[in-house]
Length: 222
Image (cartoon, rainbow, N blue to C red; front, side, top):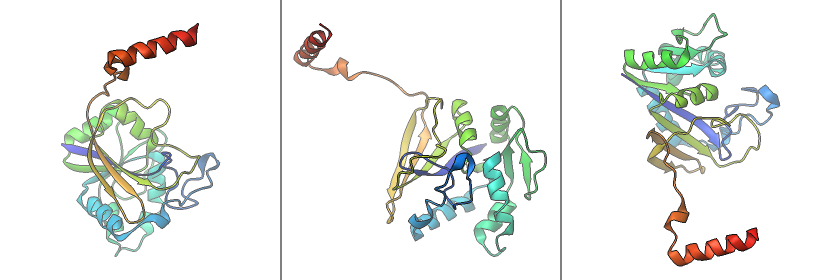
């Protein structure tokens, strides 16, 4: 069975749009692309390269697929990452694309959640996702993502597409690893843990604290 792993770059305020360059994704008037470029170090490159080499396939949304397909096939063939991405199977979730020009690409069977569930069941190894925010939110709601690898970069962008936008399904997570790098980037790895649980600190107040809280609340309401 395939394991579906998301590996995404985020600003501190959760923006994931256009990390690699100014022209990467200008949709919505986004003019702050290329924000992650100056925060890389050798340890980050080595770790990401290791994960990419271990991956058996890619799962991408339409927009991310188009960005990748416009870049990686035209990268020098001696680039090991380009060689890996160009050769591996690539699955694309899109209702509008009818032709996929990038080598070894195929459309995900519609409806997408059922199509991805079948991909996971029918294959083996790690299936990596990059970008693809809308697809990620869809799959989270169907409990199909096994692991989130979030690279949080030390800057606030204030605008742009966010990975966890309004309306994303609640999900419980378990932290597997937190690792910092020389440029201030923090990698957080989470695995799914069912639904989140809820509670209240008010139930844990000592009796005298709770009495004082109720007295103040009643006075404020009077």
